[in-house]
Image (cartoon, rainbow over all chains, first blue to last red):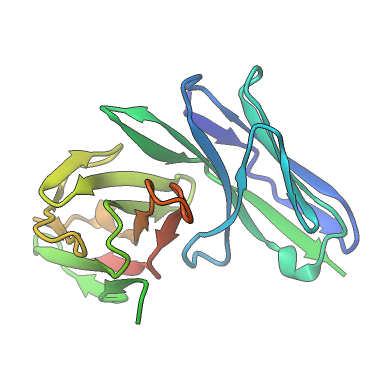
Length: 112
Length: 116
């Protein structure tokens, strides 16, 4: 079982739709959590960190559920420019350091 | 310019040749990472480094060698390239320990390597 799992999609939604992605992780000692965005195999870029209390940045809301070991990303009022792959990242302990593990990504396609 | 850079951006080589991919960051981040990205596998960690002269294996280290004699540089060497090492390679650094960046990773633009 992969340590960080995501539904690869693609999620195909119309402009203006609300879409949600989940990501599950297996290491209960995971420390920090992130969502990254990647366009057409360019470098991943941070979308947002995920905090225990949940956090919001404009149209994007991220939540963490430690008990069930998953994080989520909600995108409201989808734009064409939101089309990308969304990567879930979990930092977990490994040999004295906290090392990131990436999910395989969820593909989002927003159409007119 | 400040940031994280990789060179070369594109490389074509032949099976059995040695190839070195370069990574340079200007933030003095302590942690640096090398990933490869392949269709169906996502980003997989090859090696990481917690500081100069400290390196450790990631998920897929076989066939690769790293060094880190200076904080800002983290080269990745394929000692004898194989076709299965055809991939996109990303270098990253993170600013853990710093209040403004935490352990957010910053990625270089990637190197597209083809092994014939």
